[in-house]
Image (cartoon, rainbow, N blue to C red):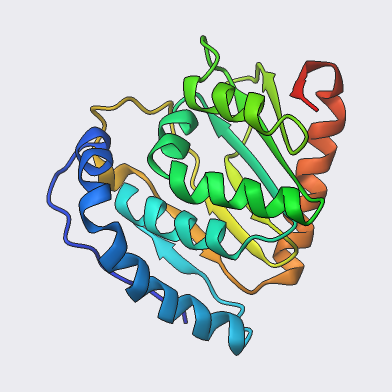
Length: 203
């Protein structure tokens, strides 16, 4: 059975959710932490359904807080806004990765401009964060995140997002204790990363 958690969302845009996230993140973080801690303690290999952009931010925040060694992400151009909204947790994760001799690798597909937030982080964490910019055929590159060896965010395919898109367009399955699924997505990521070697900035 799939685990679900329904937010209070009523037609907000991505920009609306980003603007309001800072106001509610502390309260929702503690709520989600208790759920995620239970999943990880009992090794529940079932997904939480990410059914809105609010979900995406809240659940990815939990992934960042629990990441100790390796972060892998495939995203589109809007991923920079996503990371910027989660900048506090992302920055803390990068510091943790540095302390553990870990690394973060991000593949950004089909963006016209170098993302501002990630570019700043890549300078500060050049020993930890690597970013590859690629061009991909429409619909050919799925967006996902793999953290360490047991967490995965597998996003449903979608057209490129804009800030005015509705928050409920964002759907994904998020696993907090699935070594098998994390292994599969790590293999997929590494095969894409190997092709992008000459396009990497950072370390």
